[in-house]
Image: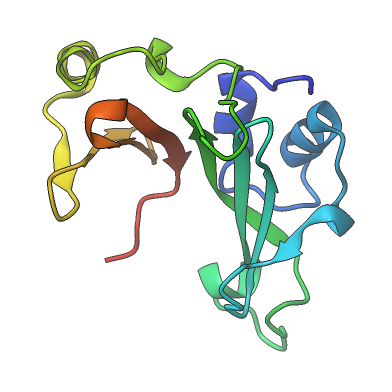
Length: 165
């Protein structure tokens, strides 16, 4: 897989499947709009593309879920890239994402190191999860989240549109 740059991902998040920014991502990873799958939970208006072996997942929403469009049927697209998830070590595949990560993160960093390094630039994280296992920072108009997996380290790093409240 040809890994897009973080700048390419940042430019594509929030853009639709007809945009040049998303075409750049699709071209880099070798997919087309037809490769997007129905969301695994069967949720209307959502699509997903994942390469488990490469540790990369892209999540999309129908444009009609993000803004009011007269006479638009949900699931007709175009599709807005909402989240990019970079997976850490996965026992099932024995692999992890090997491309660049936001904020110069890497999967070998400890929670304390990440909090120190990222917080120096973006401030203290918002902490989520039942056991405080997710740190999130605002990165411009995007949200950077790091999901920790106990002793294993980083479960995943995600970059996407802020979560709806």
